[in-house]
Image (cartoon, rainbow, N blue to C red):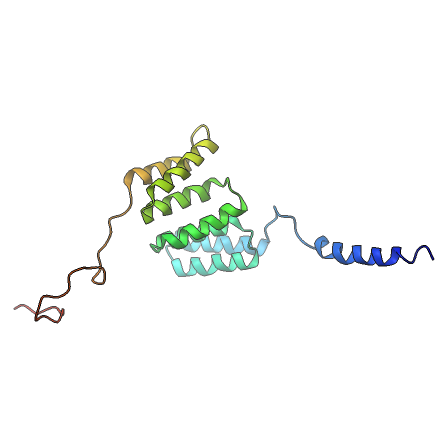
Length: 175
């Protein structure tokens, strides 16, 4: 009779502990995710941005803790001139490891690309604090900050001037 209350407690313990026993440790990334990451990085190196994006996003679906794939997705977004999207990917990587040098440098570069130079300088300061002897990530971010944001390309929609009075805005053919 004394064992009867122990059985429900044991059953509850096993029900709670069993799902955790089948999970991988946090430091171990799924091999399929790593393979997709390598495939995406190869496509990025070949400048095949759509294929790189597809492979890297698949790597994240397989294992959301794949920081390398998130950083590579940030590089793809920057190559597509989408700094806001790149910043989001770098922030996701930094949530997994706040001291990731590549994520900090990538986010800083994307911030410069977006025009947020002061926030990029904060990333540079953190990078310099993390790698005391200097590191390539801090050097490249410092160069990007020194270069400054890219010049703004003015589009027809952004133009404050419309077509002159009497013109429909279409280009006229000159002989």
